[in-house]
Length: 116
Length: 116
DNA sequence: CATTTTCGTTACGATACCGTATCGTTTACC
DNA sequence: GGTAAACGATACGGTATCGTAACGAAAATG
Image (cartoon, rainbow over all chains, first blue to last red; front, side, top):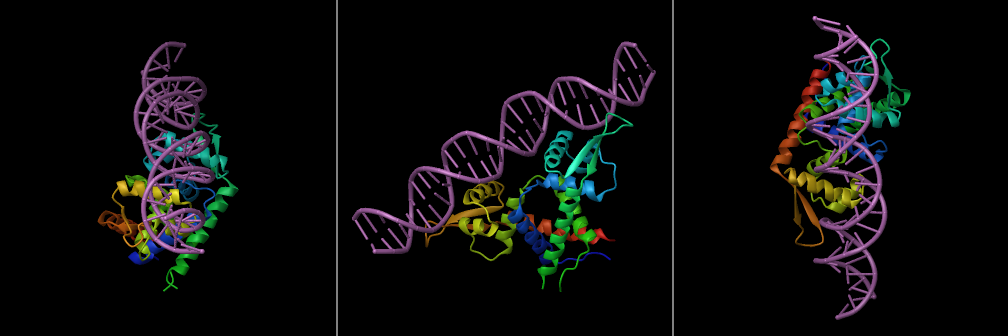
């Protein structure tokens, strides 16, 4: 079932969710960081720095920095690949899953309140 | 008609739109800047620095800085209020309207492609 | 083996944002 | 009129990101 939106619904939803995100903030993720996080949690593993960089169309240092920051916040973890020790495998965490779960709930709630 | 989403649809939509935003970038708006822009274009005027700061729950310099940046990009304009020259009225621009129109189209397209 | 390639990280200078405090201008108040 | 309040902008030091370039480690190549 396709998700059909009117222009008003689309921007209204974005507005409502963005507004609440700003209010609660706390994490204050960049657009790129958010994209990386969603990619890690919504696309089947494994995820590597190089793979993420290619998928997002950014350079590798951008990924490394984002993983540094989000790692400190407990949203992701990194582990060396034992089969090819050049690679780093990015792993999900419980906190990261909870964070995105809450984001999903927020979007749903705001979508429901959109056109009451 | 309420906008009912499943958790998968909600995060999937966010993922797809965020990803494409990162790809096209160019503007690279902060979460706060995006919230300000949507507020200006989706809520009836007039908009003031103080009003936006209160609505977003941030300090006034945050609004001033965001308006500086987005003003340089042609997304918004500022004008002194002639009836109370302390105030600054934030105005919409054609470029800003076009930018949000494209964002709306993007959301709709990604929503449609979400569960094909 | 020696060399090249791949992978992620680090170094560097530049830029933009942050929060707090302060400023100049304008209006309201007494 | 003189003082206080409101409004937006600016100054400041701090922090995080940016892109480019170089680096060390590991694997592939010959």
